[in-house]
Image (cartoon, rainbow, N blue to C red; front, side, top):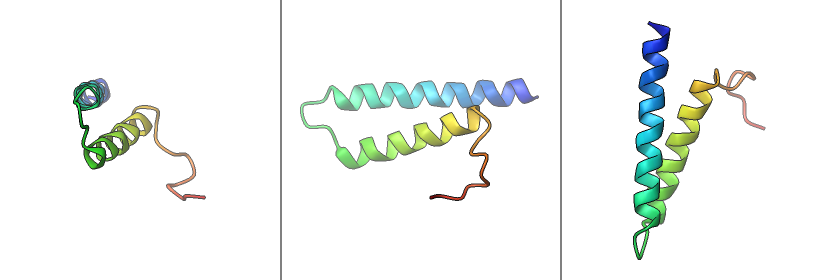
Length: 59
């Protein structure tokens, strides 16, 4: 089941990459949408790599 979960995360990551690419090609990209998509992509990337090892503490 772990590989199914990773496959789903990878599919979401790829979808967000497509959305980012589409939005950046627009004449006037929505910067708030781009910011939201980039944050989602980063969270998915962290989940794919095992997440932050510090317990989520920022610093």
